[in-house]
Image (cartoon, rainbow, N blue to C red; front, side, top):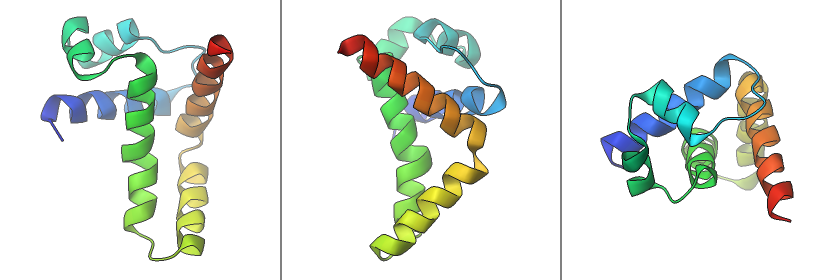
Length: 103
């Protein structure tokens, strides 16, 4: 992956891992990452795309790499969520808000 994309994903992960947040916007990400809004939109179409990229890189890919069968994957996935409670709760809440807004 691109270094800028990695930086944005890492920044989002760090920001959502520190404190519970009510919302996290592209503006919040620009401030935290010191990356311009234009650069963010060059790589991502929306904040939801950044949420999904963060979820895939920080949770799914880690669980998949460390698992050779479905049961191990589920175990790693659950373990990761329990070890990263603040991030997981923020991610769930923010994704839920975006889904509700769409429907």
